[in-house]
Image 1: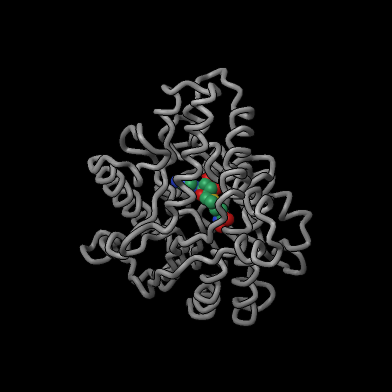
Image 2: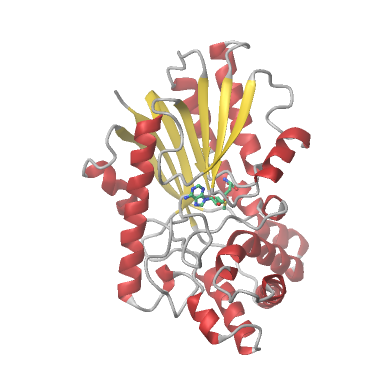
Length: 352
Ligand SMILES: C[S@@+](CC[C@H](N)C(=O)[O-])C[C@H]1O[C@@H](n2cnc3c(N)ncnc32)[C@H](O)[C@@H]1O
């Protein structure tokens, strides 16, 4: 699904906006880097060409450190001349121009000072096979796998089905999470070389809560307020829902337990409290307005396109997003809180 309907996943806000407003995601992925470096040191790496795949790359800024770390861990093993192909995968509507601009011009580009590295982009959903069979040595996915392929049903009462008051909606979301996870794993089972490793970091679920309810509720309430103020109709509001939700440990383990993951073996799985760099900055500065702004811009960058896709054709989407972003910033500034969401960190191996 390419994000052209209200129920399917839409890419992050373009024009490099996600790159400029994803410090939270950059902090999240940091906890998975040690696993990526360990994997780069352990994989067989005995083919003439090494394949690295970055699933859900978005606009690339947050891929620079992980890919550079993987290359730096591999080079002493494979020598300076062995070509490394880095495939950045995202939805067709993704802002790939920003990704290639970072690669070309940003001092943090993993190409800077590293020879024989060949980046390519693939604009297709990672819920299907996107690379040739047996071509991936090292896979990476950060902050992407809590995005589902679509919402399985309407969610009239919230912006996220997982927070709906309707148990049937929540059950349908869990079934979609399971189907998407299985499809993702089965596609990687075909793409990965024997001995290859895949490191994934994404939003999880704690035993009692997602930990993200406070922000999800604040964002949704800002849309409700905007509808009440006449900026969109309540019919449009009722169609809005972002197809994303955290997974529990049991949901993540299920395909490995019942054989649906095929030749993929779960090596390591942890659920940890997510870092909150915005809160750390607020504790230093005491600037609640700034805390509101950074959260509101991050939420707009990541969720704005999926929400706005439900608006009527002809609606000025930028004007609605501006208004919602202002409302969310004010709401957070009035009641500053520390984020309590959970990160899943996992390592998977492809066996013979
Ligand atoms: C929050 S961004 C994460 C970007 C980056 N990896 C990071 O850590 O900041 C999630 C990305 O996953 C992408 N995505 C969502 N569903 C996808 C799918 N089915 N196939 C490929 N990419 C997908 C989105 O378009 C978006 O760019």
